[in-house]
Length: 259
Image 1 (cartoon, rainbow, N blue to C red):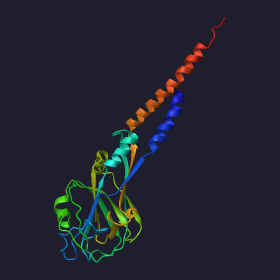
Image 2 (image 1 turned 90 degrees about the horizontal axis):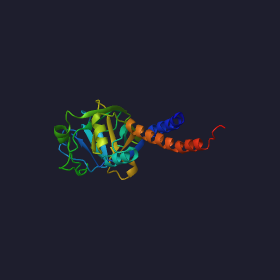
Image 3 (image 1 turned 30 degrees about the vertical axis):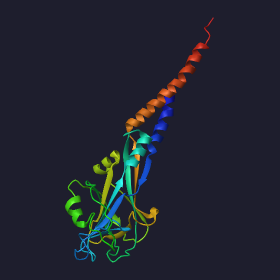
Image 4 (image 1 turned 135 degrees about the horizontal axis):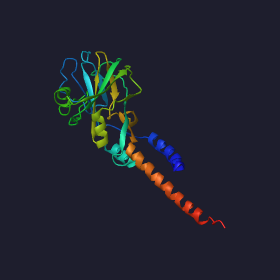
C-alpha cells in the first residue's frame, strides 16, 4: 500500500497544480459619457472601436465603460477537464489594449486609479452608436447610473493606471462571489470600468476594434476541487491494487511446501 501511495501522491500533486485556462472575448461592450457640459448623457456609443474611462470634472466630462462576457464555453471546458462542477475558479484576468485619444470626445489619457466592478445586472444593451453617429438606443450614462448600477454590485479591485496610449495591460480581478458564481454557472458576466480618483483618464480598444488580437479579453483559470482529486486518487489506488493482486497470487502458487 505504501508503494501505491508513493506513486499516487505525485500524480495528485501534479494534477492539482495543472489548472486549466480559458480565454473569452466580450460579446458586448460600450462606453458612456456625460460630455463636457452633460449634453452627451443620453447618447449611446456601443458601436465604437474604443472604450474610455475618465474621472468626473475632466474637460470632456466623466466616462465609464461596460463589458459583457459569455462564460458558457469556459464552464463547459472546465467541466470536461475536471468533471461537471468539480472545479473552482483560481483566477480571472482582464486584458485591455491602450489606445490614443483620437477623437475630441475623449479626454487626454492621464495616470490615476482605475476601478473595476462586477455588475449584478446583465440586462444592459450594447447599442450601435459611435462618436461620429451617437445612438439613441442602448446603454447611456443616464441609464447606467439610474438602472444598471445597483447595491448588489461588487468591487473587483482598484488598479494603478499609467496614462499609456499603447500596449497591453492586465488586471487580476478579485474573486468576488458574483464573479465566481457567474463562472461556475457558465452565465453572462458584466464588468464596469470607472475612474477611482479625480485624475484618471484612459482609452482602450473595444471588441469592435479592427484587429482581433488587440481587443479586450478575459482569461479564467480553474483547478480541480479536493473531491475530484480524491476520486482520482481512489481510482489510481484501486488500479494499482488490482495490478498487484495477480502477482501475489502467482507467488503463493509457485511456493513449495517444506519437506
